[in-house]
Image (cartoon, rainbow, N blue to C red):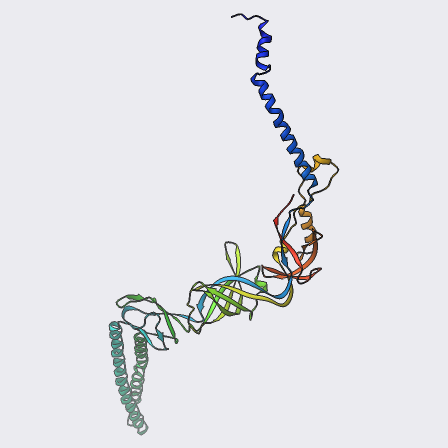
Length: 420
């Protein structure tokens, strides 16, 4: 379909002319743009006029003087001072069990008995063999006595010329044979066998080797045992040991005689005292973690503690009575970045600034030694750093050895709210 060129201006006028939809949009955008521009100008003016650091609020911590206790925390297991495992040296069938769990026993008290029928039969056989050996010895001794008398008479007759040399030699030979047949060695052997059988019979009665308490019983009547573990005894539970593993990083601070405290899950509100009695040299390596076994002596007069309980111990490695202390939060505090005035004008102030390189400060601190740090205080509304040299810490507070810090001084510990 063909169109006349003269129709084009009328179409443009219809779309963009007064009263058209496009014209209405332009009228709406003009006041909206003006409002946005006004808000932007106001925001920039407020930003520029707002004082630097306004609205920043800090949390403060106070330096103080007081006692500091440094401890090493570790875990371990409670064990009896002397624990004895009682077994049997012979095989057999359990006839009776005469001790049970938690029973108190004395030295020599019968704990169990094995069936002894076969043992008693072997003992009787050995005794019979001993009797036969003794009878043979008695008979041989009689023969020796008889041949000795014959030899004496033969020698007397020989002196009188009434006995030939051959007869004297025969009497001498008979006496020698009689002495040779004297079987005293067989008697000794038979006696030794009897003693052995009697000892074996005695081993069928299991007795307690110590005064103590029965912790474990592994047998029942009628059970067949063969050199097995039967009982586990503890000499006394009134005095126990706590075996802990001290990390290699802490073992240099741990020594015999140091005091400690510990808790157990059974009594979480109760704290027990202990004393280190041994720090072992042998390392224990588990998954590349090296620890050293340490033994602590524990008083358990009320028998509230039991073998096998796990405990968390705090070993006191250092005590300072009067130290200048600052909270560790004050040592960790880093003030918020202050705005940097530049000559770049408004644009430079609105653009994001490069973060401050705090690693330089850290390297500067470490250059003087790991014990050199700094704390911050507020002077004239601005954070001011105070270099300090620190000592021992308990994880909550740290001793200040030197630095311009006084007891009662407020130190910045955290930022509660920050301005721009």
